Length: 91
Image (cartoon, rainbow, N blue to C red):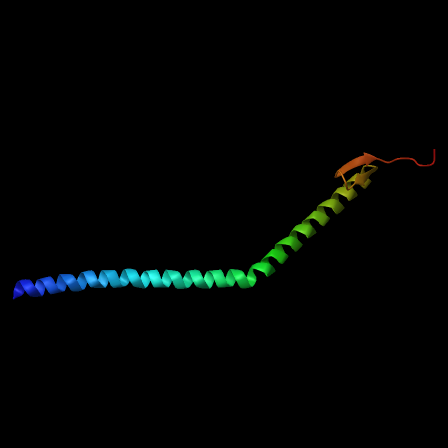
């Protein structure tokens, strides 16, 4: 009788391990579904925010370069991003 009880206890322990593994799998699946849903809902807003920040950085860079070019007596060429000598159109 003692051997059958020990066998039953071993089976229950194995069943609990399997049950825990299934529970972890279900939790992982639920977290994955929630993460995907959050990205679907917020993806557009995140993209807009990153695009807006990039545009602001680009504008700030162009403005500071134009200011620098002006301070050294040159003009800023936005096509090349370089300072160029001022051209005299009066000649």
